[in-house]
Length: 329
Length: 80
Image (tube, rainbow over all chains, first blue to last red; front, side, top):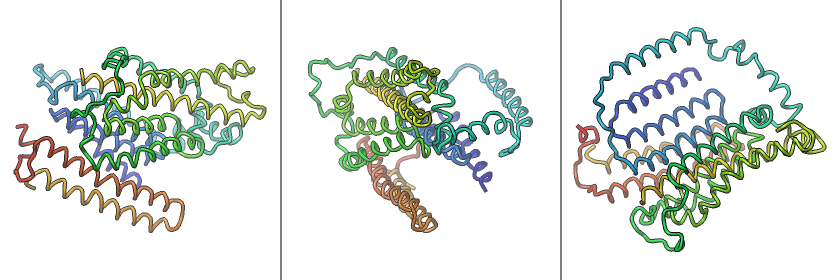
């Protein structure tokens, strides 16, 4: 049954991908990309990867669609017709497809317990998690503790991407900073004239924020963690910006605060590593953070997940505001 | 269907009522448990957001100048 669902979802994804390639209308392509991400999230869920599914749904289907739409507002809605010959591109794609299909013959069967991925370090992680870290969600244990270096790298990749976008678009707010409190009710200043979405949105935003915090701090026990929570909290603030206008959202969370969040989260993560160095352990070895090594692991994971969430929130909101404020100039 | 509004109307019915019926069905399967409470929360969320999304879509179309009485070509026909 699961395999059937998987094949169904993958077929839908192939159709969506072909539609994205086919359409010349960029707005349609963006919406199809969101649908593609949602299908991918469902597929991850079928593969029992709930953490990844949550991230894909929040970032892929939610925030990147908004960012693409923000980028579209700066450019045209139609793709320029290509003039060059497509023959070379087609042949490269065809050859690559054949090679990839040929490579799949060597792969283990779906769900094969003897597959190398289940034989390498996974049994060790599963065995050691309950003993060394004692949290139910092994994914969080692997991500935050066993492979803390990788996650540190990911956080800095997100941080660097945020800095890159800010450099490209200019980090300074475009309005003159003398009158930050004045908001004009121009069209384009959010959905101020849409009564029902505004009321419902205002009703939902606190609950979305609460859910974000739940995902953040429940990551040890269920699917969730800093990346997902950061995306959900950023989505709540972006919803606020869409409803009330970007200027109002910037008044609640100004640029300065966003930049502090971006750097602060990464700094918190690195700081936990340095703190564990100072206390006599290895870098990012949380066992030394408390008298009991297991409690130390809990504390370390809580802190670095918070760092991840803070950085992701800051970067996503900075990127959103960079796109949105660019449109006004 | 003749225009966008009739299509939104049809889609919003399935969007709201269909999702509600599916979730109520899953709740009946789950019985009285934590899962049922979570499903009820999702149900409430969908009951609020689905009609709102349809409303936002329709009012955006109205603001963009699409009159409900007009018979407009579908997107594919327009682009050709």
